[in-house]
Length: 300
Length: 295
Image 1: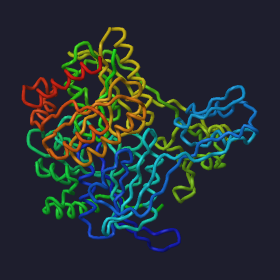
Image 2: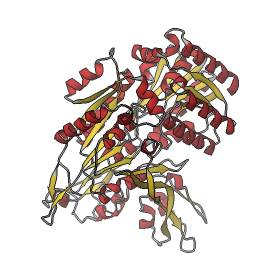
Image 3: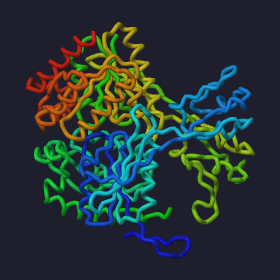
């Protein structure tokens, strides 16, 4: 258990934050994240940061105690103060504002909420109002704490919602937090992974799996976060991933063989360690190895 | 010319495997891989790259430490916590720095800096390629690691593909979509003639299918559904059919689980070229229906 001393000299024990990511979608991130969290007997929280397509709740059926709307600030122009000088449109890097002769158009979908327009308006004619992008639901499943985000349909930008889900990290003192990360390698993935102590990369033994694993490894190197690989649907015939991990010095933490029984349990929303009891010990052992491989925990 | 996007919401349901097969079956078509942050279609279409271009999606702030007077104004205005002050290491030494990963390129810091020490620099955020394959022209891209603007890159490569399709008088632009429902997905769906939703009969698959269908209907895109690996859970497959019936969405086919799929991916060829089992027959039948439907 990493221990950190906070500035006031008190000893604070901060929990371990483990992200479960993959690059390629559908390799088994949720399967691993759910079983990893369920394998812990107490003091664990599971955060589903795949806010575009959250699935964790299907497997753990949480009791939702709190639903909070999440908004990003977008500009509102007070036309009685505005002299249509055009400054706001000029400073907006996202083309979210257009100034006409006697009107200002706001394209809310393009706004990143940077606040530049309201800050720099010479007549103080711009205030910011919240635009709802989704919700964060939090609660529990047994002794496990849970939260996820749900992005509104048609909404393009997920990172602010992911940040809202991750606020749970500050609210909780769980010994272990597991984060289910969305697929890919771009901004939502970075937002979900960053500040974790360790990242598990779930892959499958195909050229698709290898290609996307290499991309995900590059992301983690850039973020300087230690990692390990879980090989899902492992079966002989494609050893390139094991070889790649060996060359890169990335530990392979677990092999989950291809098994129709596992696929069927998954299809019904049954967690892996509930369908196959022998995996409980494997996941407990995996957490122990992760603790040894992790970065010391930073204090916010 | 018709544009068709293969999409799914959930990752790993078989989008790329199906897109590659449709590429092999379609006559007079070009193809686009819009999963720009984890592209895979090139691994089965074996492209020969004809042209490669750089993509700069945006700018990032850079602080000139010689000019900086360490006033801290930039840290105050940055909404993305992208600027760290010398005190962030706890020692009070060092310089003001911009974290290139967190910076969203809003330029606000450069506008408020009283000594003009911050400039915005174009950052290379990806590459796109025009390639030739034995099935037709192929436009694909690679977003640099940890970059934003995947939506812009998707829009760019789709524009290139449309130009090629028009110039060469092709009938179809077949688009392999990314997972999720956010920015690059919206860019992959905008203005297409048909969204082919690949659903798998798992509770997660059904949940995600419903959300991607909502996105498509939000943007008025016609939807048709393909159930992949339908025999993994026949009861769930029936739920998908019922769901689609209620929404008056047609189900174009049921593809059974097939060992040939993994085998063909490993060989780097479209599954329809790997033999002729039940799954392959069903994929061929589905493509025939698509052709009839979109004309």
